[in-house]
Amino acid sequence: MPERNHSLSRRDFVRAATVTSVGAFAKGRILGANDRITVGIIGVGGRGFFLGQYYSRIGEETGQCQLVAVCDVYRRRLNRAQQAFKCAGYLDYRELIARSDIDAVVIATPDHWHAKMAIEAMQSGKDVYLEKPMCHTIEEARQLVETVKATGRVLQVGSQTTSADQWYKARDVIAQGMIGQVIMSQGSYHRNSPDGEWNWPIDPDAGPDKPGEAFIDWKMWLGPAPERPFDPDRYFRFRKYWDYSGGIATDLFYHVVAPLNICWGEPQFPYRVTASGGIYVFKDREVPDTFHLMAEYKKGHSLVLSSSMANSQHIPGLIRGHLGTVIMVEHGQFERYSPYITVRPDYSPFPGRNVITEEYARKWGTVDIRIPVKREDMLEIHIKNFLDCVRTRQKPNLDVETGAKAQVVITMAVQAYRENKVLYFDERNWRVLDHPPEST
Image (tube, rainbow, N blue to C red; front, side, top):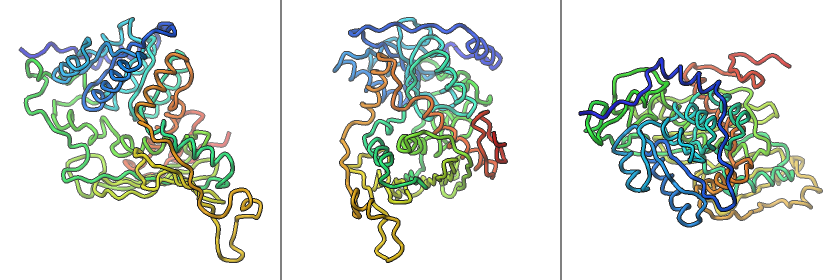
């Protein structure tokens, strides 16, 4: 017989969301200096299982944490994770969150579940490591910010690039005035393969009507998304579909926009956003295989991002200023190690065209400056930063406010692309408009 269905009906889903939003908040366990942080993971497909390996290893090597529970709607993945990590397993995420002995929850589900699970976990007294993108909509980003403030929980967004050394080096360069006023940031994310990005393998024997380990709780997986008959392509390759993902923007541009916000020194909401691109090569999807974003910020600088899943040539990741440029990733791949950042003064050999003053030249020179970057495992540093913050209650490297500012610009870009518009953001009211917001 097929596995018992643990799903919420859509009516139950709305009711559950309402109840948890108004209920009293549980307080988390007070951790002593020698207490291990107990961790549960929701979603143990490719990414969640990979994170589980890190948490398990860090726990064994340092004693900082212990992985005690995993959850997945696909019984085969759940069994695999239970066996690998020797812990409890659940098909229903609510059972994991309800455990009073769990301190922190890792959420590595499809994007459309991120916000609801994170909010419920925080309201239940858990701290949260939330895989990128932070959520699926701008309203959810607002709710996450408000829930962190209301509950006092720690939330680390799982874009591990933000724990790499080069962004903090670049932030210091900009703060010292080495490139002058910031005018433009640029980056890219490019990949190429015969079948196109996100065409992960499909298990042909899996589904909601299958017995044993082949069972998938499809209704639970859909959750807040529109109801549809089971579709293996949507389940195993969810990033190709708007209901569950924003494609390139939310999967890959998050790794670019979040660290750029750190470089700027003061994370910022966008003022105006537009996007372009299309499905040029891979016709098996709803989301574009080529996508470009342009945003403007009130402080007087622009963001320009380029991407394609049909070509693998990146452009350098850099920030331009009036007096110079800081190049953080010359090879352009934001998730790859770069041994140094380069500060390039905007020195012109032509008379009368120099913005570089004698004072600037005395202080910084007129040739490239290379600043070494530490080589570290970004993901390990990011996870350890989260665990440290669970214990100290400090703000993590990619806190909810910075995460929300990155989320807003990429979610607006998705909307601008789909509606073929230029959009504006009213940050006071968290509203996307098709006209400039009224001055306040």
